[in-house]
Length: 380
Ligand code: CAA
Image 1 (cartoon, rainbow, N blue to C red):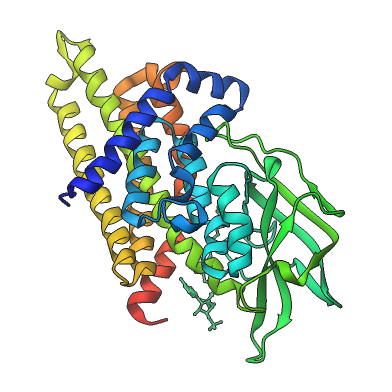
Image 2: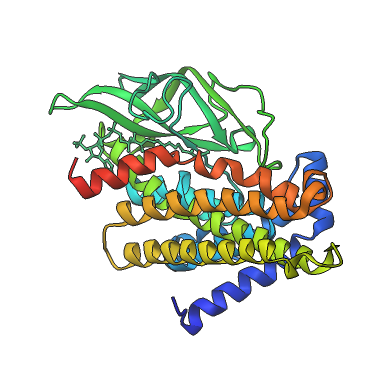
């Protein structure tokens, strides 16, 4: 897709930011300490990255999904974990507030989130309900003006340093007889809220993940997000956008893997010539580049589809499915080109290979994307 001047500028701003701020020294330190610098988070907020689609009246950029996808892609090209900080407020917790919140809730939460003063994760997944997200055991029982929440949410990105969390809970059957799931915004300081241990992850080191445990947590009815019993649909709407974001992360990381492969193949000689002069390597690079371009087209198509009111559920699922799969393939090929050096710390490809493994898993596995795609096409 040929990008207009506006989107070329979006790309340039994000690329310049990533290359200036996310230096290899800083990224190595993140790997060593597991901590992503707070001052870079603040700079990301100041650059407008946390509220790309949030209307200006709530402090956001008031831009669109194509700008969001390009920004996430460019940050991910330099730092996958950095792009997680951008993707999350734009798609998950922040998005639930954006699509389902009252005017008062939007005023209260969106501006500080966009400005980087509060963090609001997305609490959907449970220990027993990952792919089958509707099979949740967390309950919210009405008690006067309050709801009493009990349950456990798992793999909650950013929970260890969150100020609030969107929590989806079972509020009993809807009038239609179907299970009713409702979204709440829960203050993490409320009595009864606690965290599980911080997970030690294979990749995306520097963005902490843990369980959120809810024991008789009293949440006021003013903190319900959207309609009682209708929260599952809002969660799915958020995931439609989140999946576009993961697809954009995948393209960014895949591009980085390709860049590393090209660079290395022009530096290293074997059998008397550079790796890129061996047809076996050149063909691998041709294959990788073609797939990265195809994935990018799918991501931008999903974004434009959403921006123009089309069926973004289908387009986002296709983009996430394809981009996350080829990203893992491209990362594996790039590592292969690096040989033994790709397997050791200090070579960028080693981190990229670990970071992208989760892309075919989080925000819906590839198999879930296949369910969504086939369901959309076959009307199931
Ligand atoms: N938009 C709006 N509404 C939607 C929708 C969408 N995209 N998809 C489904 N719905 C609606 C349906 O119309 C239906 O409405 P009614 O009840 O009124 O009829 C309702 O939602 C239920 O739909 P389904 O019967 O299709 O739901 P299901 O239980 O069969 O599940 C699923 C469908 C697609 C498999 C879903 O469970 C799913 O997406 N699973 C994967 C979960 C997931 O992605 N988890 C990621 C967690 S977040 C994360 O990973 C981020 C992180 O922090 C790491």
